[in-house]
Length: 268
Image (cartoon, rainbow, N blue to C red; front, side, top):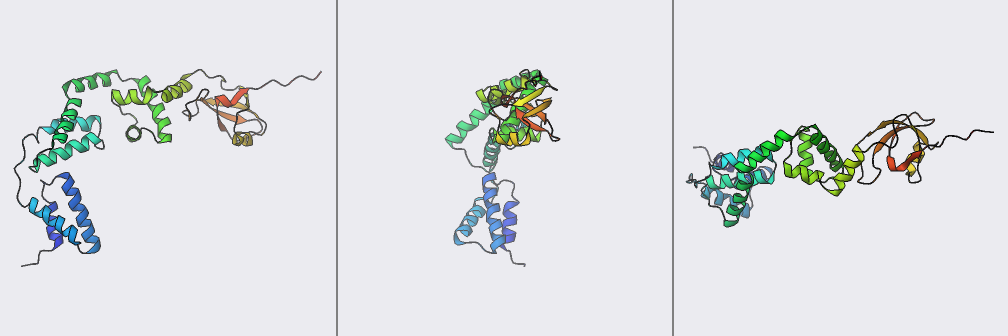
């Protein structure tokens, strides 16, 4: 009879579909250590034996595990698999299927998630999706681009980058568009340009040294307006693309660093 190795025992343990997600992750980490080192420390061996004993026989699932499938589907649809809600509720489901009761705190959190994705909330979500239009999509794209540069609202930015056509939840939309920073960025983008395409402009007193190096003459022609989403939540943050006088390469400049170019005085 062939000798049963730790490789065999780990494979048998991980093949059991009733492991909780937490224990499966832990068992996988133990197995990774064993494959790297070829052995287990005393502490890791003890933990592995405890897992083997705990899952020696298939447990009797606790009622309610299968009923969570509906809520899990709703969470996946709205928040995505990478969300905290999805991770928590799938972990709870695996725990119930493993025959392990929930703590009072887990029960409390689960009730909150079930309420958050209840029938009324789903109906509200459907109404929000129906009301989604090009204007809201444009507002969302602008603030996601702005926040993506600074590392804020990482969850929303990551979801938007994965799917630019995403319809965020109403809460997420309001959170990222209805704050003082987003309002200034949107105001800068949608405001009427002070300098139309084709006009002559000059660098203002606040223009950075780098701009002055690229625009030696201090004057340029406006090539395009809203060349990029504003980088700053400040007044005059609309971005122009300019062609410096005497230059061949365009540059980007905020509206607040520009002024109207004065016409040269005629010689008498």
